[in-house]
Length: 84
Image (tube, rainbow, N blue to C red; front, side):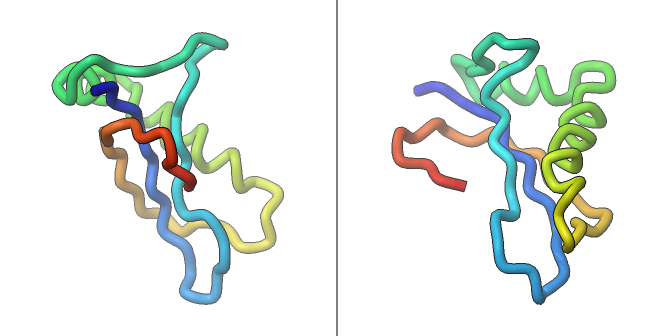
């Protein structure tokens, strides 16, 4: 099983849309992990969690409804039918 990174953002209750960003690439390379531990190690390495959060926030920069400050960065099993 492969593992991927999911950044979950918090939105006001009125928001109708995606509330998570799947991180599948880094610098043009696919970003998948062979184990949960490898994924967590990547997220916790130096400032990766801050970079992941900033990237996820940038996805919504032109959106009328902005995410509020709050985040969860999760390592989740990759599923072919995952649709965030």
